Length: 309
Image 1: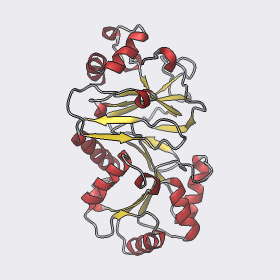
Image 2 (image 1 turned 180 degrees about the vertical axis):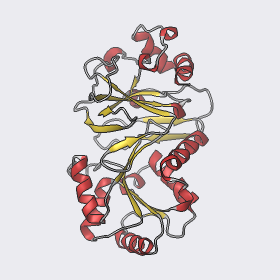
Image 3 (image 1 turned 120 degrees about the vertical axis):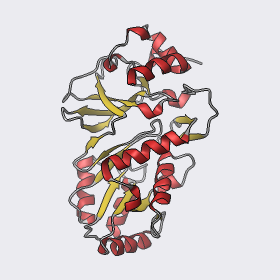
Image 4 (image 1 turned 30 degrees about the horizontal axis):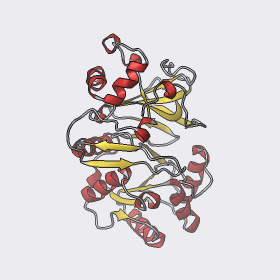
């Protein structure tokens, strides 16, 4: 299916087609997913990346916290996104209706066009639990609800941006037994960035849980990967992670070798399903992967292959 979608997008996505042409790759010669060229994620900042002529239903924007131009993901069919994030969550955690969803995502709520807010808002609606909702600056109310619900043995999903979760555990101490604490990464300029093991150690101690879960997603994707602990991520069947050589973007590395993370997201059929991210990581034989960090500079090797007005 990935190869079929590649053929479709290589013909119908103007930006992706021109990128492939600059690489002098004959699309008919691509017979394995390892041979698929991955579009550098920076093009979502400067170009309209679309494989569809359908009417655009929504525009998702990246946070742009570093002062750089925002990524723009034009979505022509929101139902595909909704199906992807719903089935993706269910694949790893079961029905969202079973959870009370407590969302602590202030930096995302304070701006327009967040795909994460769209997803979590849909989770909140589907959960149909009285206490489900977004919490902006009302940490005391969140802490009270968290303790009360956890004590009643209700299943809780606490999903939050890293700096806000740290703010919460600095003010309150918890001993949670029925709560999934899930961080979505990033300090968003509010705190000093921490490596994941240090962040998770602080959150484990603060919430009194044995594992901190993580969500791996981005503006440019319509699917998410999840970690149930130790920073090891799993992805749903319509997603795949490949690792590229940092010195040769067209070379895919074997399992266990670290390099740039390439994402196949088949839900992204109307945009681009093959994206070379700015993240560094490695894959493992059991189909999991780890995120090790990010490229220091935004000019990933290979991106200068194509300069278009």
